[in-house]
Length: 439
Image (tube, rainbow, N blue to C red; front, side, top):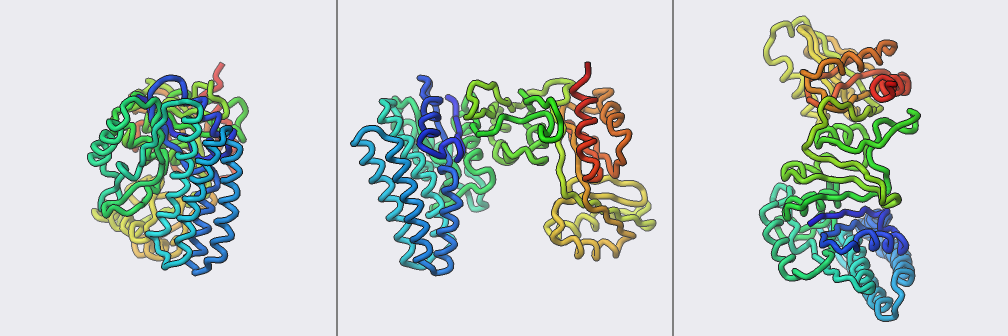
């Protein structure tokens, strides 16, 4: 069985819901994970904000606007009086429930319940639409099987057991519709998965049922081998290793949060990225298979700050690196790149919130210099050290660009260059020519 996930824009209007319904009704049994309709979660956050501020009038105004919007969606979506009425009753019950929170104390617990309504509404609307079309569709309530433990991490044993029980209740269904993002916590309260949201749900479900494939449908056309805004003739990447996808996600490929595909990676289930606006395109397949000796993509991340700590006392002194790292840890600032020598260490960070405090503390251990407005350019692919020649190609492409740091060997899947932001476009074009446009 496959697991398919559709994001908010994919189900953002009645016509989009109808398009998704066409895509999923191919006769194969599947589980379909849906996000809230686009814009809904943000509006529910806004409603919660008014309720925190004890302004029920402000909250009710937003609630009424959102309810009117949903009533319009229902009128456009269903064609029979029976399902129009079912849809309107559905909307009324959810919005009356949200309104009930304008009367009492409002805390984080109530906010989580309010935020869950978006997914509960979108899945029920889709389920009714499929039933109206004569499809054997069943709603799988995520709150019955999706649970996190006391560390707010998903509980895979519980998820597998309870999901299996839910599926066994309806063995003849063609399509199981379920909510992304929402869950219950270890205390049985309504909560959410935070990082990666609905993608995480799809990955957890895929691992729980040992799916043949997990499909993530978005309105973006897969991953490309370079930034199409900067480089001409970019091409979609058709296959990535999970580690390559994680590298690209860090560098701003907004399609996937690295955490959310970990369950699929560990269960060895391939994840395919597909485009709802162009459903016939092959998309990008992410799996544990490596394409030997192949460079996949070049990516860049802006707003990087480089810090160098030089200390003659460091020479052969154990404990120096630990002291440096502890300073970053104490300010909850993660390090992107690191290069060391006998007398110094250079690191790069992308969070400068506590930069001044970090610099003050580092000055206890050596001379500190800072370079701002930097950029990391990363070459991603099969870059095991035995693969001769790729580093030379990449370095040769960078020959006319001042490079502040190079990182190679920390992973088998990337080489990273720290350069000035003003050199980024030239670097991306040069690397693209050297690595992808060979005649």
